[in-house]
Length: 237
Image 1 (cartoon, rainbow, N blue to C red):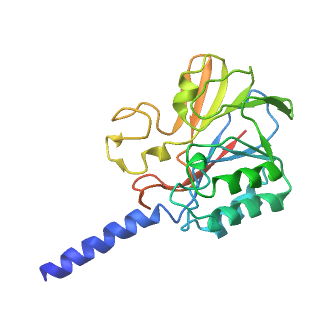
Image 2 (image 1 turned 180 degrees about the vertical axis):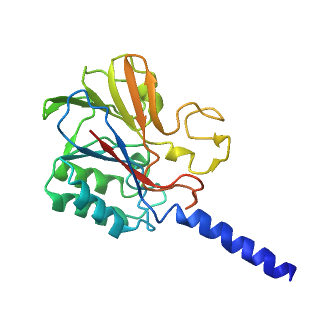
């Protein structure tokens, strides 16, 4: 009897952890300084083989965004590109503009060079430059640097690069995975590049003349585990 209880508890834990991989949250934020465009923001896909692509395709159809902002780590340092290739194919089919920056895994993953070539053929890299889109000035940060070009919206991977930047505007970041595993009443215990019980994990932070919006991303690293923290995309208006 005791063995069956242990087995049922183990199955329940696995189902809870796995559920957060199979349900994409679509979170909305009205933060753009000029109304008009609708942007779909995604980050930290890490070639996620568990992504429910049917849900993702439905989001693309229902939301019909004007553009996509990609915040890095679409591949993982462990390797693999099958799911990433499928994801990019779906974005390409929409015919909508793609703006992007790179994360830290692109520089370490075997598929990093492939991804860079693929993205350069699909969209516009914003690192170290500024472009205009529907009345918005967009710019991007190289990983591990701060903003250099005054803009309305900045794409970056690590939120600490935004925190350390001096230029005003709205910063979009990923990297944290929302803590990946979160605890009741505590939240995230650790995210890369910050101390334990970090200050900047996911959601919107008002930093005075800066705003910082962090997505928990579409994938995982180290282990395919999430708890109290679903995979997600953002709709920015």
